[in-house]
Image (tube, rainbow, N blue to C red; front, top):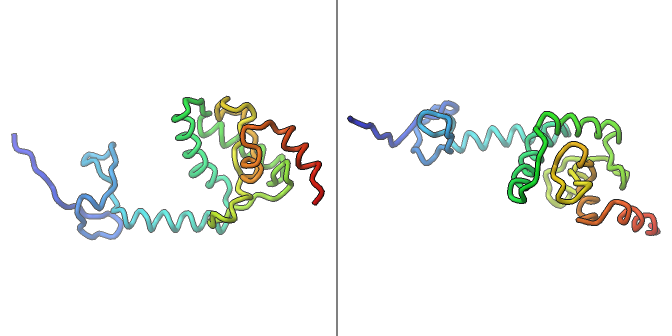
Length: 166
């Protein structure tokens, strides 16, 4: 049986002929590679992400960025994660209930590409540490509050914040 080996492929986006190592892997494709080259994929992703930040599209941010990160984190720690649909319904409900603000720090959520200013990003907090990222065990807070809280309970952090005179 004769087997053909390819050394290049045409990108479906820019239509240029690229070496195979210029394509990301995709196990469901017949050749095992994405149809767009890495450069086109990066450009397309950058445009989509820029648009998300400009429009302050929290639903896309949570669905595409946060959910994937916490799912990966949960797998490493052997924790449960709610399906994406349930997770998003829970986020949207809490987001509306708090009017887009951290319930503890009372600062509005804000998406900012600059890592130095991500203190107001919405962040999932496990009410019971190690209880998994499941609906009922997640409370949405600002990244700053989540960072301050760590594994401490909410009441302790709120008591400390109430005793601060700013």
